[in-house]
Image 1: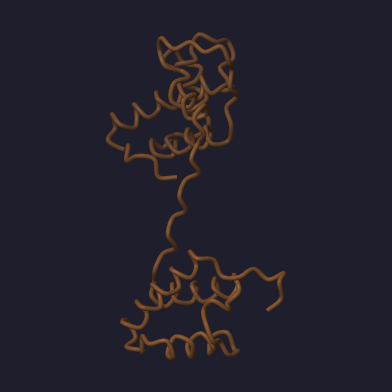
Image 2 (image 1 turned 30 degrees about the vertical axis):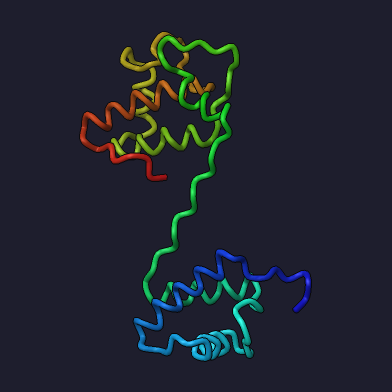
Length: 175
């Protein structure tokens, strides 16, 4: 095999073996090594002697094929963990009584969190902007209420989350 082609990863190997075991039980195929290699060879249209010889692309193809046959959903990717300082800022900026010497700009993830709650409560962009300008908004003391910082994004998110919870629509962070 060419060195430029990436080999199967340990995670893919484990996933492929587990899924093939489920497929074998589901379709009454043999679960032994010879059956696995014959199945993989048939799908990839070339002889396979070991799953270790598979490329990353071949493994993805086999995994997708089994998942399609079994109707298995793709497992969710784990969320990327924040570093310590970023996590502390995300949890504290915008809280009452908390003062920070730094200003952190709001990023796409903060706007995605706000959009998630807006979708939950069923607000359009126009309704949201109207609420931001209202006296009930956490940004009501501003002439032009725009979310620019993490402080502002957190204040708005927590207010919207409170509304969703009061309406019985809050189910936790899914995105």
